[in-house]
Image (cartoon, chains in turn red, purple):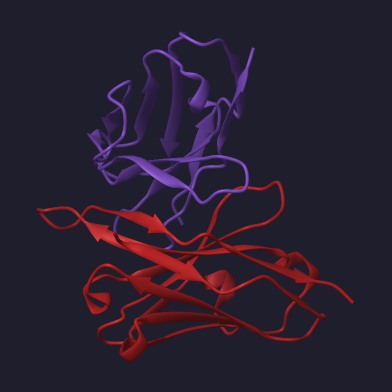
Length: 123
Length: 108
């Protein structure tokens, strides 16, 4: 079945960087964009950006421009999200999710999602 | 950026109740609106895409309607497993593909 498996929880110090991986299985990795979404403790969902596993092209939310880098390694069907200059407000669960496009194109939704990776930023 | 306003932010309901959650977009988004369900400690799961299309495997008691700027998620008869937080998300045009702030459905 289609599945996204993310790397494990990490604790980082302020100012550090973190790289989260998202390994896809059960479908052609290069055929679907991967989106990243985060969720701070007790808060809602925040869209961060997407990467095209085929071309490597990316699009980041302005809030994260300059701090986030999304990459992929198609040979191992894995997408990565690296966030630098970590601050305490970056403490959150980070999700990857596959973009699924409707039959007529245009509309898309996120399905499935990875299980989430908790990143804790603490001194 | 397109803002999505969900209401209510929380509600209490009983098993068997009909529940309606609304999502209003700050500008026209056609039918580019999805609904997700999230249970504590779990990843979100899509229920409805393109405003009114039921995702495969999702019970038919869930339905979505609307277009333009106003959208509704309805649960026709609330079941115990439906107690969760629900989010709308717009996928219109260019990013960011914003989410609503969520509606927590609790047991009365």
